[in-house]
Image 1 (tube, rainbow, N blue to C red):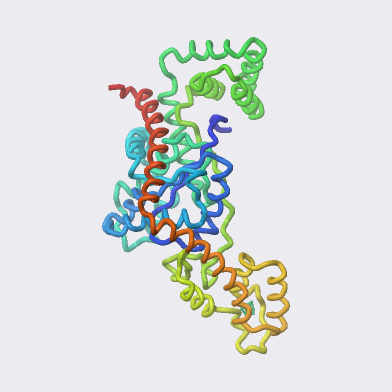
Image 2 (cartoon, rainbow, N blue to C red; image 1 turned 135 degrees about the horizontal axis):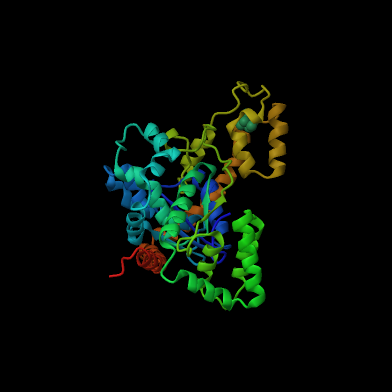
Length: 404
Ligand code: SF4
């Protein structure tokens, strides 16, 4: 059971500025963000500092990439009216919290993050034996904890990073959550709950701390959440007291598991610039047409009259994403009986991809032609983000005894 305060329904997520985004990003991440922005208080940031952890020798491309990524987000429907968009380095509290957390994070926790060794192996041509690269999962922790985010959209492969964040938050709360007068403040808060609720709370506390009853912990949390007359500080103390720690200063975020993207590259491998199998979100229509028309198909269809198997064809994977059920039935019937040709088959899906691309390009145009509007969106996002991060830093520094 975690110590997430129930109030925190804030979602934070970032993306590295890797240049123009492609359909893999759209189907894998951005469609999810578009949905989340209407369900939670969302903060989406371009992680330019993270880009530096691997590309510190090629910084000249980062700035343009940042703006490209933001325009891509806006063009697909990330709506600044529904969420906040900001640039990581423009909110220096990320760096400040990173530094403070680095004081309490054992080096071994970072060394054992699975992606540390994997990435070093994968990116062999880069010198990643740096302190910054070792520390980047902790920078991610700071990115999340600065906002006390309750939820973080992650894929299965990033769960270890989130676990690190949770461990760091737990350690922080354990070390610094017991402020002076903690017990008397807890007693006061319990009293504020009224006799009946206080009794129920203490019963949950006993059941959890003595018997490890997770249901009792949940009930205790719900009980505290429902007390309208408690201040936020009271609640955090009571959550922490329930779990046997101090006040929860940095709540542990929960994973919001992102469904695995079904969008493959043009060659059916994972869509990635390094495989040269992508279609950019704002790619020119003629380039898209060429790329799709030259996509590999089922190798069994050497001649038009050879029947094929859609499941062995990359084009079919794209039909499953872009084509209607009736079009998919048409493909199945036509391919397996050699009733349709591959170009004819591709055209149906291509039309849909182009239709979508037209919308993205049109929406992007509005922002490309109005850079000051984009800057204003980012300025507003940075300000909103910083207001929250600043408050967290104040609490963190006070808890750590940095009160000058
Ligand atoms: S007809 Fe369509 S699904 Fe079948 S092999 Fe050709 S492109 Fe692939």
